[in-house]
Amino acid sequence: MNKSKFIVVLFYFFPVFLFLQLAYGLVIREPYPSFIMPGFSRIETNASQYTLFDTKIEIVETSLTRTVDLQDLSPYYSKIAISMAIDIAFFHDDIAKNYNSSQKRYYDAIKKIIGLNAYQKFIEEARNPKMNEANIALFSSWILNKINTTNESLANSSIYIRKYELIKDFKTGELIQANIINEYALN
Image 1 (cartoon, rainbow, N blue to C red):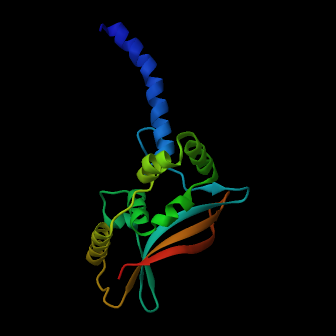
Image 2 (image 1 turned 90 degrees about the vertical axis):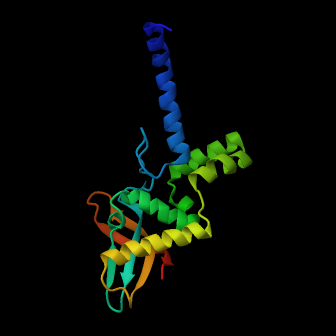
Image 3 (image 1 turned 120 degrees about the horizontal axis):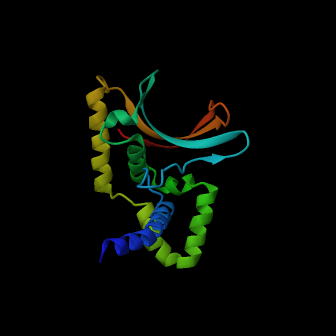
């Protein structure tokens, strides 16, 4: 194949490649920015406020609550990646609740096109993977070891992973309300 034919084939293939990449990002809803599509799917807006979901690790002592920054657990992973791993391990049933209304419409349309069995097999399992108990225990011990290396005294402390619903003002971004929607005790 000479160079001009290769360029013509590439010219026709590239838009198809872009479309497939965007469709994959939409269907699978990657927890981190993909090659083309950034991962910001946890926002639902109305006229005056918007809702975000955030995961926090909190160390609760008798009269003090400290929050561990997820980024401090490991500099090699982003906060989004650690948050999604926590969601998969501890809050698996809440993952689908984070979809905004436009995502739910797309997923319903895809489910109708390919059928319920294929949807559960190829899309649900890829989009919402599950951890087995051994992996959850290993992940929990990794989190506890990382927290123990950065904090001095945790003997009389309880460590919780909490999922928050944050309602913020649309214009200023100020926090209006914070609700704990789920929590998991690590120790």
